[in-house]
Image (cartoon, rainbow, N blue to C red; front, side, top):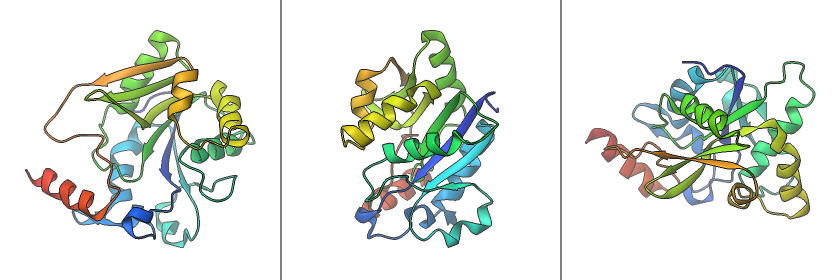
Amino acid sequence: MTASGIDGLILAGGRSSRMGGGAKAAEPFLGKPLLEHVIERFGPQVERLYLNANGDTHWLAGYSLPVIGDAVADYPGPLAGLHAFFCHRDGVAENREKVALVPCDGPFVPLDLVAVLAAAMNKHRADVACVRYDGEWQPTFSLWHRRTATAVADQLLSEKHGGFRPLLAKLRTSAVDWPPSGVNPFFNINTPEDLRRARQGSEA
């Protein structure tokens, strides 16, 4: 189900150093690239889907997604992707209020993620709604209101911090405690060993 007034951003702008470099989103998983799993599960939940990616993006040509590169150099962290999105969307006439984030290496993203996050944001009038799974925050599975753009830029550019967690503490954040399931829906594939574990888990 598509959530009204919400854009989607897939984060794929890191170096993927723990995977040996290259495009982690292109890693094969159950017969197709990781990115395709994320697009299929996340894309229908948002009005417009974007991809944050850096470096050589020629292999993305077949996906017909707007690709937004970081607005700052040297891969400072995932917050740079959200900052780049806000910078990009400032010049777009269709300016939706909220953007949902997921990582390119999360092939099990829940099919109702955006709707659940949006309900929590609206209920608590939050700036951010973020998944918490098994007691752990999952900042790359989150929903951000446009009014956070200045705080995002300040932390990235002035405080030189490219992670999400400090902002979750500063802003009005609604924690969404996701119920446990057989396969962790927020599992991130950061290493070859993670990829092996994800394949085993999906076959269990």
